[in-house]
Image 1 (cartoon, one colour):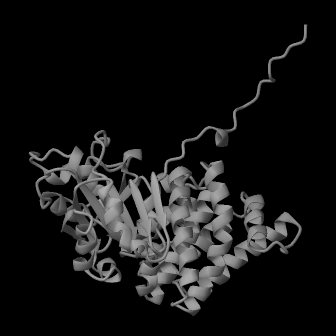
Image 2: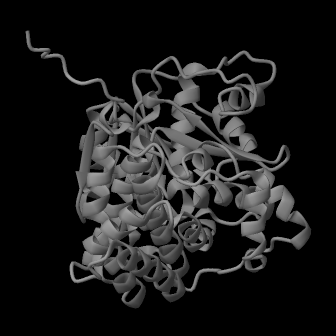
Length: 407
């Protein structure tokens, strides 16, 4: 008798995965005019959650209300984002939501902060206890690593995410980042149920971004693409998407920094940002994002700026463990790159360092206001889900030494 049983082997973790993305993605310049049609498939009233800059990019709140009204939706601005969402901001916005009549759909419009605020409100509108005696606890108890860790169990209100920057990919992710300056944390509310029901990505809306926002957003996107490609929890579908999007994004960011009106390059960056959201949401991140979150708490550093600062540092730390992956990314950027994996990997690290230098983003922690005596705090508070995905495991002492070298 022949033994036909397959040989025993350890299962490949990359071959068991979920892939959760928005059910509908509408991409292309000028497609903001379709907002009403898209929203009307999900509800009969529209609650707009937006940043001031995002509204301006779309022609003002009156135009958004008009686009929604053309499809028969009564629309109102229910919350205005001001910087990255805080517990206090989310709590106040939740208390100010109008009564739910019919089927409201949340229009989350702006950068990642505005979209995260919209996703958080959509989730809490159906899951928080409206009669709770401590409204802030209703928010905190649904954030990872703080409070009671209550899950999102009731489907949130449907969200149509409309990004007006090309960076965070929040239009495709299952989480909303919320900080609390008073309690000194920055955590995520997370659930597969929180993925927007539709992403409307119109690259022309990013034309209003100034150079600083374009640079920081673009490097946030590129950090997410790289970290999701190499992280411990990497998955094959996100990696395939990264290989398509990253090389074009590296070239396009240089183009759009040189010519802010280059709509083709901006479209490439908007596509890369969307892909980066899919990739990070279905794989994970790493050290750059772990430290960036803590920098946001300690120094108020904008997320994209912090990622741009930490990306070259993280790549040097992970170089030995990620040589083959970095080489593959370099060959995707330049098919004529060095034949040897080691040389190609080094060339990729140098390519990204040169891109950060061209963007003009901060290079040292003191540049973003970190005091030398806060290095230990920064290292101790850079853990969380992102750091757990880093290819090289780092304890707080090792991370502090790394950070000291770029202080």
